[in-house]
Length: 368
Image (cartoon, rainbow, N blue to C red):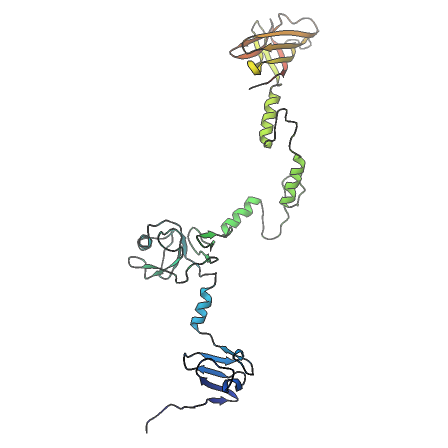
């Protein structure tokens, strides 16, 4: 008599837990409905197995056990993907060119081995996806695209190379780096803003003339803004410009009224105390100097006056008024205004060396 497998037609029971079989998923009637919680059901049409999770009648009382295909289906739909060895941005003519580069050297300065995952974002003619190194790089390894095709929202972390420590997100068209992502970059940012430690840290400003030490950067900038004040509105010389730009204009205008100190004249030599570019037309101007001259050898002997001049770019006329003096006259003192070399000049001459001080004021448009 031949041997045969032990067969049970209806099923078996182990301490009340049943093991039964049938065609298709366990239904709402029959033995499956009567089986107690914890029983097993085998579908002989496809090999799937079910476990009864609750007593009672109904297919919802059973749950199918998961297999590899179920797990694959779930994982394929996740946005987070396995890390890539390197991120290669070099544009290759095609996949063959990228494969040649992998077999003849390094990728992004990194040695590549079998099963490494490479995020290529420059290969033409293929999907923007992760490629897996198949075989041993050297001469015959190939690049095979990951079957988990990139979809919008996918995220890849890069392990090595230029972009080590960075994370890339697929926006449906290209991979985009997310945030600073690397510890090196985060360290640079901390140094840049002056943050010395991780976590909550009170700002420590090097000066507290306007801002309050310990205030947030946002608050400190608000304090600075309040001190700077509203937009400048008078606009005689400066306009709604940058602070440095307006200061430069103001400095230029103040320069028109500059003071000249310790400019020596004497011994019959005519000395230029002040000089300004002559202008004509719309820039025709009048000038006024407050001039003080003292004798170098005896500074108690002083001479002072107002010097007025008007010019049209080619000629000048001037007058001297409000003359004052202390002590005896300064020998040979002479004051005049002329135009020479395109400049209006205030001139001082004397027999003996003198020291001249002058402050200039102007009326009219000025172009310097």
